[in-house]
Length: 185
Image 1 (cartoon, rainbow, N blue to C red):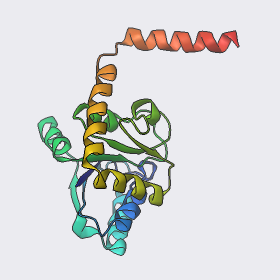
Image 2 (image 1 turned 135 degrees about the vertical axis):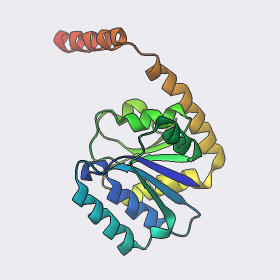
Image 3 (image 1 turned 60 degrees about the vertical axis):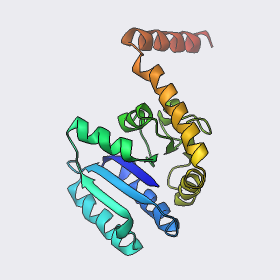
């Protein structure tokens, strides 16, 4: 089963917790593909490389670095079975929506705007941040159940249509409605 992480190489993305979860799943036939941009904190890459070595999981990881070509990135998404977003905080990660657009089930943390994209038990599984055990448990549930992966992936694809067809007018109306409700309270 192929896991995919796409994001900046930054502590806020929670990659180290995903690595700890992967180590807990060492007996499973799992590979993790990392597509990371290190332009923000290049020194953090050394920390992550050291953690991979300490955990003994280097043989399960394909680190591709940054992928800028859209066609290549799409191929990487399509080759994955599960998308993982272990963020400690995130407003609305584009990578989660990209994963949904290709029909991937998503394992993510229940932070920021992620629950707006990922509905727990519907198109993915939400876990608390900084919890490698919960992350491992959620990943394992999808690794063990290909029907669940398929079902959640289909729901991700369906749910992505809502976001892909949302206009700025729609967003403006939603904000206006939310602010109006707050003012009425």
